[in-house]
Amino acid sequence: MRKTTRYPVKKANSLWQMYKTVSFLKVCKNFIAIQMGRYTPWLGVKNWLYRTFLRMSIGKESALALMVMPDLMFPEKISIGRNCVIGYNTTILAHEYLIDEYRLGDVEIGDDVMIGANTTILPGVTIGDGAIVSAATLVHEDVPAGAFVGGNPMQIIYTKEEREAKQQE
Image (tube, rainbow, N blue to C red; front, side, top):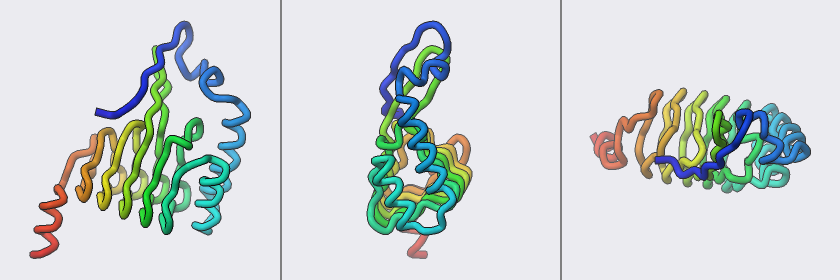
Protein backbone atom coordinates (compact mmCIF):
# COMPACT_ATOMS: atom_id res chain seq x y z
CA MET A 1 0.00 0.00 0.00
CA ARG A 2 1.36 3.40 -0.96
CA LYS A 3 1.67 6.01 1.76
CA THR A 4 -0.24 9.01 0.44
CA THR A 5 -2.36 11.68 2.05
CA ARG A 6 -5.72 12.22 0.36
CA TYR A 7 -7.29 15.65 -0.11
CA PRO A 8 -10.91 15.66 -1.36
CA VAL A 9 -12.04 18.40 -3.76
CA LYS A 10 -15.44 19.73 -4.73
CA LYS A 11 -16.74 20.97 -8.07
CA ALA A 12 -14.25 20.54 -10.95
CA ASN A 13 -11.59 17.80 -10.97
CA SER A 14 -8.51 18.40 -8.83
CA LEU A 15 -6.20 19.31 -11.73
CA TRP A 16 -8.40 22.31 -12.53
CA GLN A 17 -7.77 23.39 -8.93
CA MET A 18 -4.03 22.75 -8.82
CA TYR A 19 -3.08 26.36 -8.08
CA LYS A 20 -5.05 26.09 -4.87
CA THR A 21 -2.61 23.34 -3.86
CA VAL A 22 0.68 24.77 -5.16
CA SER A 23 1.64 28.29 -6.18
CA PHE A 24 1.92 29.23 -9.84
CA LEU A 25 5.35 30.84 -9.23
CA LYS A 26 6.66 27.66 -7.59
CA VAL A 27 5.52 25.63 -10.61
CA CYS A 28 7.25 28.09 -12.98
CA LYS A 29 10.50 28.00 -10.97
CA ASN A 30 10.41 24.20 -10.76
CA PHE A 31 9.69 23.90 -14.49
CA ILE A 32 12.76 25.96 -15.39
CA ALA A 33 15.05 24.07 -12.97
CA ILE A 34 13.77 20.67 -14.11
CA GLN A 35 14.12 21.49 -17.82
CA MET A 36 17.70 22.68 -17.26
CA GLY A 37 18.45 19.53 -15.26
CA ARG A 38 16.82 17.15 -17.73
CA TYR A 39 19.10 18.28 -20.54
CA THR A 40 22.38 18.93 -18.75
CA PRO A 41 24.98 16.17 -19.12
CA TRP A 42 26.88 17.30 -15.99
CA LEU A 43 25.72 15.20 -13.07
CA GLY A 44 27.16 17.53 -10.43
CA VAL A 45 25.39 20.53 -11.95
CA LYS A 46 22.12 18.61 -12.22
CA ASN A 47 22.27 17.48 -8.57
CA TRP A 48 23.12 21.04 -7.48
CA LEU A 49 20.15 22.45 -9.43
CA TYR A 50 17.76 19.91 -7.92
CA ARG A 51 19.07 20.31 -4.37
CA THR A 52 19.16 24.11 -4.54
CA PHE A 53 16.03 25.03 -6.48
CA LEU A 54 13.77 22.01 -5.93
CA ARG A 55 14.85 21.15 -2.36
CA MET A 56 15.23 17.49 -3.35
CA SER A 57 17.43 15.30 -1.18
CA ILE A 58 20.05 13.61 -3.39
CA GLY A 59 22.90 11.58 -1.92
CA LYS A 60 26.54 11.76 -2.97
CA GLU A 61 27.48 10.16 -6.28
CA SER A 62 23.88 9.55 -7.31
CA ALA A 63 23.27 9.96 -11.03
CA LEU A 64 20.04 11.05 -12.68
CA ALA A 65 20.31 10.30 -16.39
CA LEU A 66 19.22 12.62 -19.17
CA MET A 67 15.48 13.32 -19.34
CA VAL A 68 14.66 12.11 -15.81
CA MET A 69 11.48 13.95 -14.77
CA PRO A 70 11.14 14.66 -11.03
CA ASP A 71 7.75 15.76 -9.75
CA LEU A 72 6.97 19.28 -10.99
CA MET A 73 4.63 20.29 -8.18
CA PHE A 74 6.21 18.76 -5.07
CA PRO A 75 9.85 17.76 -5.82
CA GLU A 76 10.81 18.40 -2.18
CA LYS A 77 8.96 15.16 -1.35
CA ILE A 78 11.59 13.12 -3.28
CA SER A 79 14.59 11.66 -1.47
CA ILE A 80 17.33 9.76 -3.33
CA GLY A 81 20.08 7.98 -1.40
CA ARG A 82 23.78 7.82 -2.23
CA ASN A 83 25.33 6.04 -5.21
CA CYS A 84 22.04 5.52 -7.10
CA VAL A 85 21.45 5.41 -10.85
CA ILE A 86 18.09 6.70 -12.10
CA GLY A 87 17.72 5.66 -15.76
CA TYR A 88 16.88 7.71 -18.83
CA ASN A 89 13.39 9.21 -19.03
CA THR A 90 12.27 7.96 -15.61
CA THR A 91 9.38 9.85 -13.99
CA ILE A 92 9.25 10.28 -10.21
CA LEU A 93 5.84 11.48 -8.99
CA ALA A 94 5.00 12.80 -5.52
CA HIS A 95 1.44 13.83 -6.42
CA GLU A 96 -1.65 12.49 -8.17
CA TYR A 97 -4.47 14.74 -9.33
CA LEU A 98 -7.67 12.71 -9.66
CA ILE A 99 -11.34 13.52 -10.28
CA ASP A 100 -12.57 13.81 -6.68
CA GLU A 101 -9.28 14.22 -4.82
CA TYR A 102 -5.58 14.75 -5.05
CA ARG A 103 -2.95 12.73 -3.22
CA LEU A 104 0.54 13.58 -2.00
CA GLY A 105 3.19 11.14 -0.86
CA ASP A 106 6.92 11.07 -0.20
CA VAL A 107 9.10 9.03 -2.53
CA GLU A 108 12.09 7.50 -0.76
CA ILE A 109 14.81 5.83 -2.80
CA GLY A 110 17.48 4.13 -0.69
CA ASP A 111 21.24 3.83 -1.19
CA ASP A 112 22.82 1.88 -4.08
CA VAL A 113 19.54 1.62 -6.02
CA MET A 114 19.47 1.02 -9.79
CA ILE A 115 16.35 2.18 -11.64
CA GLY A 116 16.09 1.29 -15.34
CA ALA A 117 15.07 3.63 -18.14
CA ASN A 118 11.46 4.67 -18.76
CA THR A 119 10.30 3.72 -15.27
CA THR A 120 7.44 5.51 -13.51
CA ILE A 121 7.52 5.79 -9.73
CA LEU A 122 4.19 6.68 -8.11
CA PRO A 123 3.80 8.81 -4.95
CA GLY A 124 4.12 7.27 -1.51
CA VAL A 125 6.60 4.57 -2.54
CA THR A 126 9.78 3.48 -0.77
CA ILE A 127 12.51 1.67 -2.71
CA GLY A 128 14.85 -0.13 -0.33
CA ASP A 129 18.65 -0.07 -0.30
CA GLY A 130 20.33 -2.09 -3.04
CA ALA A 131 17.13 -2.70 -5.01
CA ILE A 132 17.09 -3.02 -8.80
CA VAL A 133 14.09 -1.83 -10.81
CA SER A 134 14.08 -3.05 -14.41
CA ALA A 135 13.38 -0.72 -17.32
CA ALA A 136 9.80 0.37 -18.08
CA THR A 137 8.49 -0.65 -14.66
CA LEU A 138 5.47 0.97 -13.00
CA VAL A 139 6.51 1.15 -9.33
CA HIS A 140 3.14 1.21 -7.58
CA GLU A 141 4.15 -0.23 -4.21
CA ASP A 142 7.19 -0.44 -1.95
CA VAL A 143 10.24 -2.34 -3.18
CA PRO A 144 12.02 -4.41 -0.51
CA ALA A 145 15.72 -3.80 0.06
CA GLY A 146 17.89 -5.81 -2.34
CA ALA A 147 14.96 -7.03 -4.45
CA PHE A 148 14.95 -7.16 -8.25
CA VAL A 149 11.56 -5.99 -9.57
CA GLY A 150 10.03 -5.29 -12.94
CA GLY A 151 6.92 -5.12 -15.08
CA ASN A 152 3.69 -3.24 -15.37
CA PRO A 153 2.32 -3.66 -12.82
CA MET A 154 5.53 -4.23 -10.89
CA GLN A 155 6.24 -7.70 -9.54
CA ILE A 156 9.11 -9.05 -7.48
CA ILE A 157 11.33 -11.11 -9.80
CA TYR A 158 13.93 -12.01 -7.15
CA THR A 159 14.09 -11.27 -3.44
CA LYS A 160 17.40 -10.17 -1.96
CA GLU A 161 18.10 -13.73 -0.82
CA GLU A 162 17.27 -15.23 -4.24
CA ARG A 163 19.52 -12.65 -5.96
CA GLU A 164 22.40 -13.44 -3.63
CA ALA A 165 21.96 -17.19 -4.18
CA LYS A 166 21.92 -16.70 -7.97
CA GLN A 167 25.09 -14.59 -7.84
CA GLN A 168 26.91 -17.37 -5.95
CA GLU A 169 26.09 -19.99 -8.61
